[in-house]
Length: 301
Image (tube, rainbow, N blue to C red; front, side, top):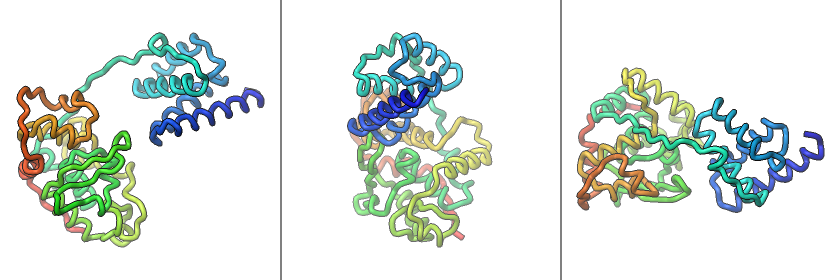
């Protein structure tokens, strides 16, 4: 692009960012949608408002060859937003690209495998994180960003703040999770974070932010490998394990939907096809589920 074209593109890009913020999009959505505009601009070295339908078709045909369908869908949504809110144009994405509907089932760990993973974890911070994430069915970031003020021990519940879709919710706090959190927190006593950043207790006590996501994920994969578990397991699978195991101990789908923060019951039904859900006590059943594990807590050095 020449200078005039670059100036025009920069103006449109800033309008795109402004529209995303005005629409209340999350930081992750803003990053993804803005990346879509940057990527297609770089691909053609032209401003997106000068691209034809055939250009878009060629672009997505190329993108499918080099990127995952999740990236293709993200770029499609990002460009659709750009056309609608910045260019004021209607973009018939179905005629340009339509990612296939893929419904995969996650691998689920048995209580024995979970016990093995938790007991094989050599660091208290990771052991506590794994147990807490599984026991409350939390997403990676939800557990990582837990603070002392989020724990309501008397009511045995935890306040999850700004979960998916920036929505708050309350989840039940199992007895073993509370005991484990207290055990770990007593080793660093950070005034805010339950999982603070730091290599030792002193650094964790002074930390101003939580543990690193990348380091946590890498360590978790190392633990899975050491346990010789060959299922495809990530930290997010702990959440699926929680949902599945709650079905096994008898909790009804509506309660599981509320616990996991699912927008639609169609997401929750992944875990079962129950026909006669029965209202039961969530906290009691979670404690029953956690009672099936055999835990040996790590002593912080």
